[in-house]
Image (cartoon, rainbow, N blue to C red; front, side, top):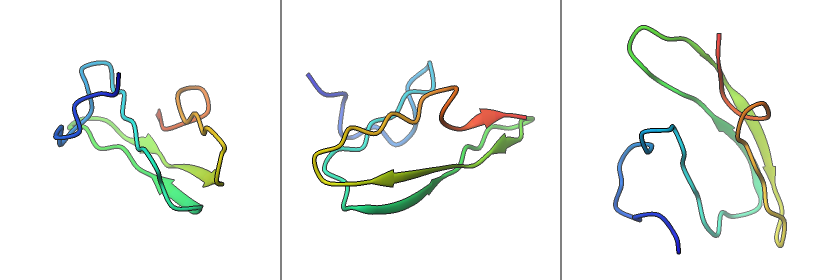
Length: 61
């Protein structure tokens, strides 16, 4: 079961899912009042699952 496709922000735990993303390089940024986040870069290829969850993804500085 996939998460609600109509969400416009992350879930309470910060999770997000992108399905069927075109191959390429993507920069992920996070925004939260009072916090600063380091961007995360992900490289997407056909048939590959990319997990940008901590410690591999966006992290608060």
